Amino acid sequence: MGKNSFISVISQEEKEKNRGSVEFQVVIFTNKVRKLTSHLQLHRKDYLSQRGLRKILGKRQRLLSYLSKKNQVHYKELINRLDIRESKTV
Image (cartoon, rainbow, N blue to C red):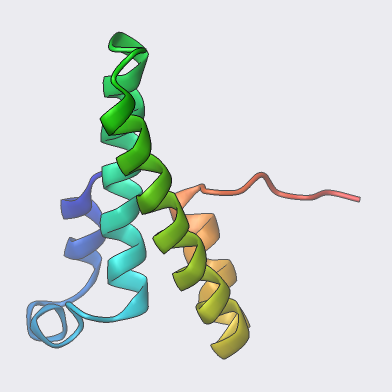
């Protein structure tokens, strides 16, 4: 899922207001993670990119934990939309 497909879901006027929202930042970080992951599959010894990936993952994890505490419904919706976590079926 690309950045533009998620942004198109948000209307134009809301997009300008919500650039700093937690959901938008998580989408941006997820796209960066996917790009870096594909890059690291080709260049396994690129240690600086590995470090950058770990930093981005940490930022995204902090934002997601904040969102889960703040609004559980938005958190679950965002996780499902971005397909970040595996769904736990009991």
